[in-house]
Amino acid sequence: MGNCCGHVWKSGHQNHDPPPPYKYGSHSESSVSKIENSNMGLRFPYCDVDSSLRGLAGKAEGFGRLAVGGLHGAVYCVTTLADDGPGSLRYGCRQKEPLWIIFEISGTIELSSHLSVSSYKTIDGAWPKD
Image (tube, rainbow, N blue to C red; front, side):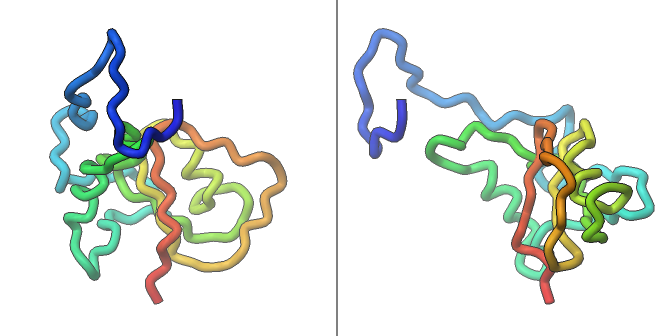
């Protein structure tokens, strides 16, 4: 029903406490699983700042507070500007498992068709860190 600017509307079906963030199996917030692909490395987002920033994502507020994205998934590195194939954005978006997608390159990706992003993905456009 849109953003109520912090107001609580009285109704017969209130949810007083939001559910806790979804956890994938036994992963902790500081763990990252590795996906076997020569074009993907095991990396933490913003490792030059603090790897605990994933924890901040789990404390989100507002409309998207229950969105999980790739919060507890492995990190997928986009290494090519090609439209498809290993190391491409489309290849990462197509994967079934949760992923935190970062970019090791900068530039424009010319897409040949609509980009469909499967569930549980975070596309982190703050990369590359030059």
